Length: 105
Image (cartoon, rainbow, N blue to C red; front, side):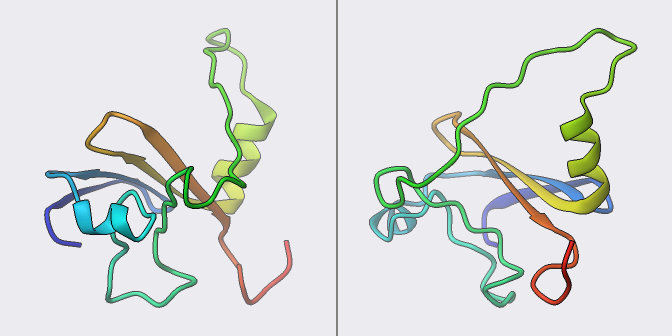
């Protein structure tokens, strides 16, 4: 991925941040272009809301220091997660079951 910072914070969690606006990606309805070296199931694909309105929106709130969110725990344990902060500062998540598409959860 050209001009995109990739920081791996765990084996299954990475952070992406483009260094510049990807105008061509936006004409295709994408926030950024996915890595061309990966096939469709592996590529991190972030659709813009206008191009693909069937997205899930969620709000993340802090919990008490000694409390763990069960949904977060299960997601981290079973999914590959990519966090994208686009050039407008909008944050996006792509979480997919780590065994997908070849095995059932």
